[in-house]
Each structure stands twice: as structure tokens, then as C-alpha cells.
Picture 1 (cartoon, helix red, strand yellow):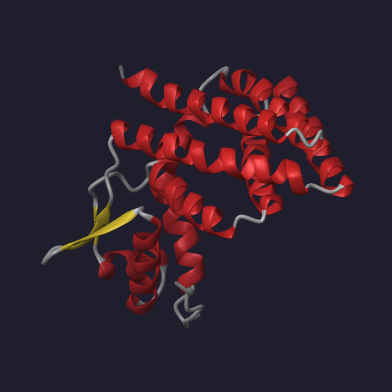
Picture 2 (cartoon, rainbow, N blue to C red):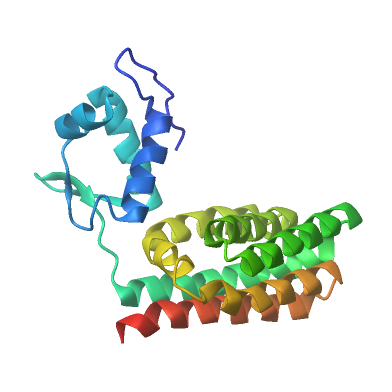
Length: 219
């Protein structure tokens, strides 16, 4: 779905609202099952109801918002079990992407990944979880892009949106970056060495670890 970038005299455009509302859902400012009333959101964020409506429609496609018959929109509640299942499906798809990326990656792209690895190591050494989380997202996006698997990419994007609140919490758990860093370095090393099977296995193990971490604190 293409977002209509309709800037109004009152402020935020539809595309800006998507980003703002997505972040509010991810961080818990808007909580699961909370009703999203167009008039209230328009007043809160300084936007037209039309732009609010477009933004909510886009977020419903991402799986962050759901429409309830006769009751409007609300933040979609994703259970731990569903978040784990989503992550496991992502593991299969991203393993495919890692395998293809290892087959296709150029020397320049390999250097970009190795530079990203250095940034991740530095972020962990400094205890900078924000920077590490940003590098984490860039790494996964880069491998998917190099793979050239457009169908997998669009599916992964939708899946990540649905479980993103759990991943946000996980990224901020003390000590989590130190656990995931060796996993990410293993993925990067295998992809850059054109080890397609090794890259797929490293990615699978990483997403399996993420699923276990999401499941673990709740158990």
C-alpha cells in the first residue's frame, strides 16, 4: 500500500504519522488493545482525520493495528506464543536470504558488512545499546537486500512489524547485545566468505536464539 503524503495546515502528514504512531506502539506509549480514536489522535498529533485514517490503514497492513467491527481501530495485541511463531518463520526466511546473499555478495558489499561488524563490536564495548540496535537492523536489512529475494523481503517486513514490540524490549535487555554479537559476527563472516550453507545455519541459529529469548522471560 502506498502512503499518501498529504501535508495539512495542522501539521503531520500521513507518512510522518505512520512513523510517529509506529514508534509509540513499539515503545509502549500506545498499549495493546488500546482504542485508536481518529478525533483524539488528530488532536494529539496535530493532523487531519484523513491523514490519521490513512496512517492507521498502513499500520493495519503492517500488523500493528487492527480494525474491530463497529468499534474502529485499536493496537493489535500479539501474544508471546504468536511472537515466537513469527520469529521462527522469520528464521526460515532470513536463513534463505543469508544463503542467497552469500552466493551474490560483491567485494564492496562484503567490506560494508565487515565495517558494520566493527561498529557492532564497538557499540557493545561501549555499552551503547541504541547504536547496537541500529546496527542490528541495518545488518538484517543489508543481508536481505543483497539476497535479492524481494518476496521474502516483503514477507519479513510484515512479520517483523507484528512482533516488533517484543524485539524492542529484547534489544534493551541488559547483556543481550553481548549474547547476540557473536551470532551476528558469525553471519557476517559466513556471508562474506561465500559460505552459503554456513550463512543460512548461522542466521537460523540467531533467530532461534531470539525466539528463545522472547519466550524465556515469560516462562
